[in-house]
Image (tube, rainbow, N blue to C red; front, side, top):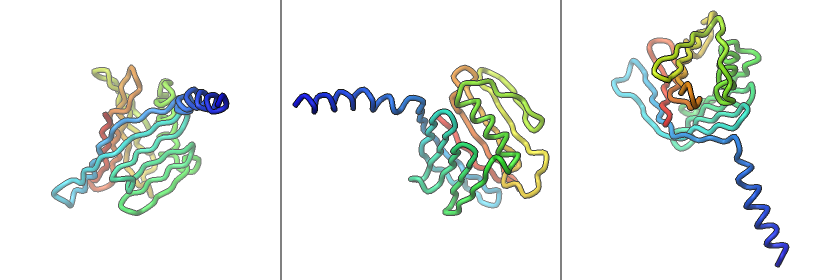
Length: 168
């Protein structure tokens, strides 16, 4: 009987500690395609685990944007795209920005990035110098300047198309 109590006590102590550094927010994803009259809107969650894990999952997990260290995996409409920030300069900058934000560190401005702060929000825009063969023309991340909470992520594509994530 004492062993059961000991296991229960350890579980109650250790289980909450296993989630230190985990944050979750509700997300609304809007997929805009210029050729279509209506946007596709789905909801889901943003999960963050320090130091370098981010998962944005919408539409019951069918659409995901996942960052695990240097690896980015994006699943949209059943198509999976994988890149590594060690081989993709745009995603290398994006990874540095995301790591700084989720770890509460200042974002260091780079040559392919602009940072603006207004009304307590920090807007970070990443535009790659070399635009050939890039899936996105730019990333725009808006975070709360005090809490580092994500407010919005917009991934712009060619032709006026974009994917926008609003976080609450």
